Image (cartoon, rainbow over all chains, first blue to last red):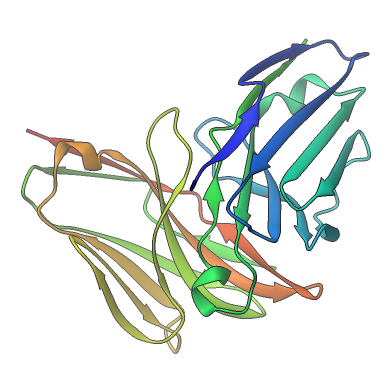
Length: 117
Length: 112
């Protein structure tokens, strides 16, 4: 199984709503990531989890709250979002960092397309 | 700060060769990676360069020169299915962990 799955595929939420994005992988990867991608732009790193611990937060606003309940799951909790937060949210994973290639190769899920109204 | 520059668009015909250049300026540089993303799809890993030189993976090759802060992705025997966005991405070590930072992307259009 070389797949990263994300749910839901599409999400429309109001600015006062609370919702969560889910990501799952069963490849035994120990690093997981959240990226945000706007149309015609590159993915922008938001968070890095390594061995279920948050290791990088790219100064993301607190209305985005990540959670890594176990080594296979990654959640992104959303609250009081703004319309400019509308984007494709991508989850990715990679193997442990012991091999050089693993630093470069990340497996991406299909993303959740989020619209904030 | 950090910057990665790559051309915004490239158009070529089937069977041709395309080279996508990437110049970078960043601290904590570890290596260069390349990803492909089709419209509506997820980024997929193509190649990486941890050391100077050429890495060949089938029709795709990638090159790195650390002294020039420069790399490129070479797409050979272009096929229609190669129409996609291609991102160079630097791997840096900062804040006690490794991270991937993507360039703006190059849209490759393959014509018949």
